[in-house]
Length: 202
Image (cartoon, rainbow, N blue to C red; front, side, top):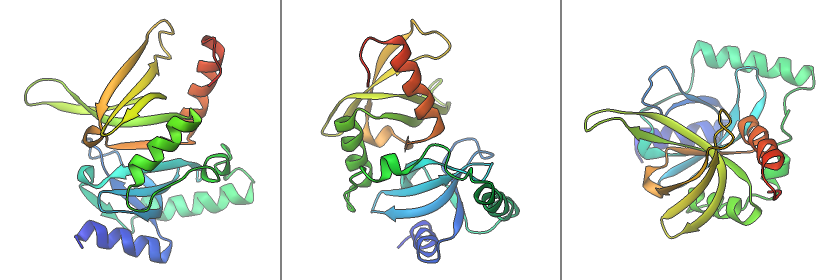
C-alpha cells in the first residue's frame, strides 16, 4: 500500500476526520470521513466548515498530493460538528436521500457512483482541471446532470447560474475527473435551477 492508501485505511478503521489535498490550490482541501476506497478512488462523507454533512465525495487518488489525519483545523471542525449536532443542523441536505439509493461497486467506486447518478438523473458536482495554456492549468468544477456515460467517457449537461441562457454539454474522460460530489448543497441548489428553468423535471 502507498502512504496515501495507508492513511486512508487508518482513517477509515478509526473513523477519523481527515483533510485530503486534491486541488492544485494548496490552500484548498476536502474534509470528511472515509466511507470506502478502491485501487484508484476514495469515498468521503464531507463535513463543511459549519460542521454539517455536505454530501458524498469520490476523489481520484491520482489527484491527491497529501493527507492530514490531525491538524488544528480538523480539531476545530470536530468541535463545530458537535455544535451542529447539538443544534440539530448537522444534516441540512438529508444525505440519506442519496446514500440509501447510491449503489457503489467496492472495486469501482467512481464508475458505479456515476452510473447511479445517470440512472436516477441526479445532479452532481464534478471537479477537474482547466488547461490555461501549454504549461498552466487550474482547478475547475461544474454542476449538472449526466446526459450519457459509456465506457470511460461521460457527458455532463451544465447550466451556468450566472447566465441561465448558457446551457451546454461537457464531454470528459474518467481519468480527467478529480472528484464528484453527490447530495451536496451545490447539487441541491442546482437541482432547483434546473427545475425552474427547464421544461423537464430531473
